[in-house]
Amino acid sequence: MNRKSQKDKRKALRTNATISEKRLWKFLNNKQQGLKFRRQHSIGPFIVDFYATQYKLAIELDGSVHNNIMRQAYDQKREDYLKSYGIKVIRFTNDEVKYNVDEVIRRIMFECGYE
Image 1 (cartoon, rainbow, N blue to C red):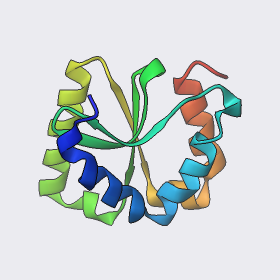
Image 2: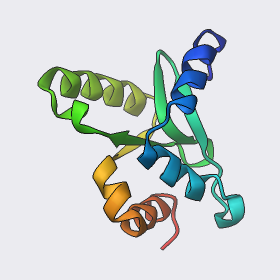
Image 3: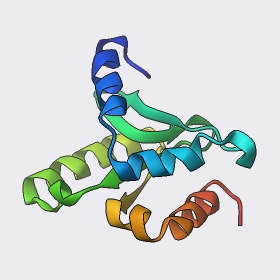
Image 4: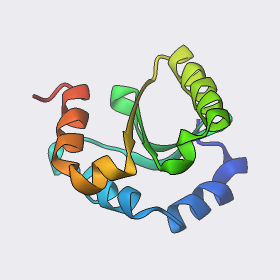
């Protein structure tokens, strides 16, 4: 899955992570919750923000660029591709992570089978 040809792009995305990505990664990288996520993970031709192999769960954080109709069509294409491999995609806005991170974490835990 994690294509070597995309290694430099994944590294650049990690280096230039948004504040919301960094904030959420602090939680997701803490394996005490029993969750193991990868950051900027390749799945086919796409790179997802966060991915948990065990749960086949991709998490995408969306900034204002995702409000563009062309970007939304691209996002839907990506999501359809991921779903075809049985991967569930959940999306949050950067503002949700910034202003309501506890609810974002609760939803992620719920999607992973924790209540």
